[in-house]
Length: 72
Image (cartoon, rainbow, N blue to C red; front, side, top):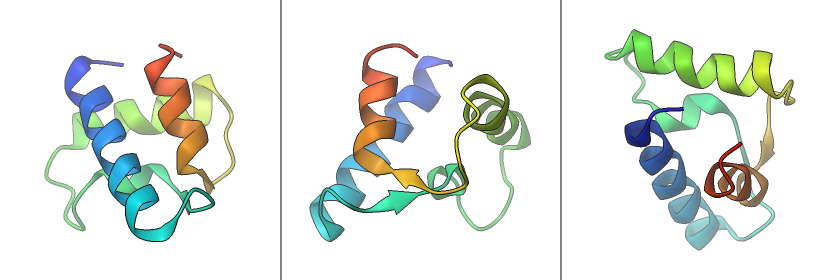
């Protein structure tokens, strides 16, 4: 996963955790605007989430943040 996407994932996870608590779940769509303005980055996130790690649609933000910080 490229550095730009890693930074965005961590930023979004931090915001969600701060506003809704450590139990908040999210999907990879949470890292993008409602418009698909960056399809390449969206596909990279989807591939990482679905194909590489076989995650459910909603996963705890804390878990995603930890995975990204650890370089998964």
